[in-house]
Image 1: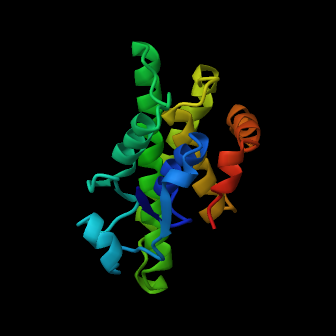
Image 2: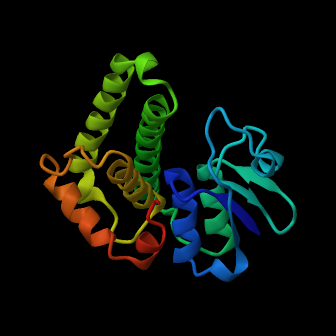
Length: 202
């Protein structure tokens, strides 16, 4: 099995966390893809995912899987994980968290492209501000949801850790912790896990 990834990507990090949590490192070849942007081409990634996006997975039987939601579920199933609750209510709480955090990560990555790739004189500040208004609303929902977080790590909490990690990585000047004490305390605790430390974005 081969996983194509890039260390800054919060979506690839979701898959990497599951690989480490399930002690499957020796069975998954981790292949750094280098920088991936909307205006770059990477033939190795394109050969697995026609959209040229990471993470991308080549399974042992030659399937090409892409999108972190698909890859994470495959890794969980293949290695006998329990990151997807079987209880109905818990399952949809977990999937809702993942969906919210994937959306927040999409927004933050879009802003990153706007500010890092587009010339300063062409950057659209209204667009940037509007995306972070959405991120802020997402953070407020996460703060109120902390009491419902699972004590056993699910794909939902993995996504929360990745979203907050990307926020700290790319937007370190954004003081989100002051208004979100419960989320801050939760992240401080979850960051002690080996899988979280090993996958910090760089």
